Image: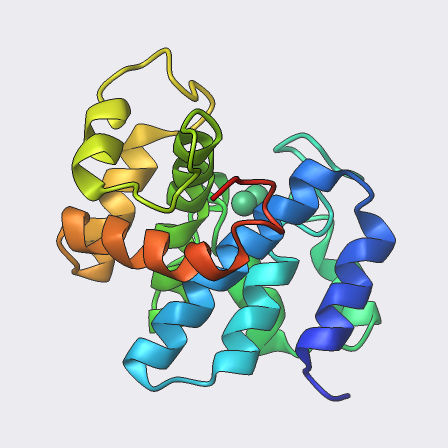
Length: 186
Ligand SMILES: [Fe+2]
Ligand SMILES: [Fe+2]
């Protein structure tokens, strides 16, 4: 089967009706896609993995099922092992080795994209003028976007080997072009 962004979107939207979850997928896709370009990697493959990483969350909203019970569905649909394994690796509770640049990047972008999105929602111009400094400040306020696992934001950047400020700046930059699709002003 062809591993295309269009097919991944088709799979995602067949299993995911929630606008918030679709926006999460798009935000992670933008961030991971930006890194694929930066690293000179296969951008379409990386975008596919990012789009699919939470494809089964609506179906399996608990960690005893997500994402492990989604994996057989992806295999049945013909997605290659490379895609399925990378999708599985984003889950901390499965403790799978993040032994490729793609897996490291997906993990590093997952929680942070959500957090940057949350920062943008409370600003009059969304993420248009958002800077790493103010994101870092908000990371230290436990009540802000409390569902975002701070430890995963920090360890993600560390595993990726990119300074946190730089990583935040990269994610913001990658998300800016799709700000309106993400429901952000600016
Ligand atoms: Fe997930
Ligand atoms: Fe996610």
